[in-house]
Length: 114
Length: 116
Image 1 (cartoon, one colour):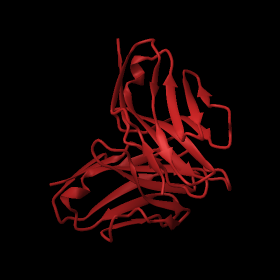
Image 2 (cartoon, chains in turn orange, red):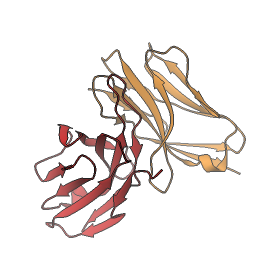
Image 3 (cartoon, one colour):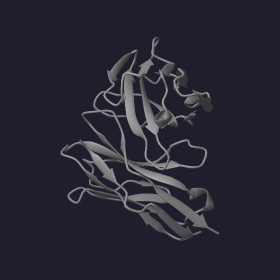
């Protein structure tokens, strides 16, 4: 079974600054995918970024990038130039290539302050 | 195009009653998933459909929970004899699966179920 741990229940950052959200996971699988999802108060989970474990290069999507450390089983999310609209709950999630279910962490509530 | 839609948005029911929650996936998506999200927690997997069949229902907590997808599109999650502990947000997601490449799951806005 896989587990995903987000050790920061809450984070805050000033607008335009950079913030990093932490995520660690545990698995015996060798082939898998990792995701960061954003959930605003509207409840809709929105994909932020995705990383394939077989790729050494860290994924980037505009202001969002990850630091994927496979040996350490760590997958952090960096948000640059934070915007007020980034305020949301952020979930780290794992999916084994052999399966289809997502396993989520407990979430980190990010607040961007003006 | 339209995203995943779920109805109702909110549902209040009494303990012991039967409820149905509906999910309309993105058109053409063959895979459909149900998750349950309790307050302050991440979503937990319930069941996964590939087409009309349940490919993995190992996340259903007990036999009061059942889901169907008769035509491979719309899905209904059914909960019998509801209990207060069933109160949660029920999320549906869909994806366009390609062999050997798990596609991104796109989520609906969820149904908030409150059992009194």
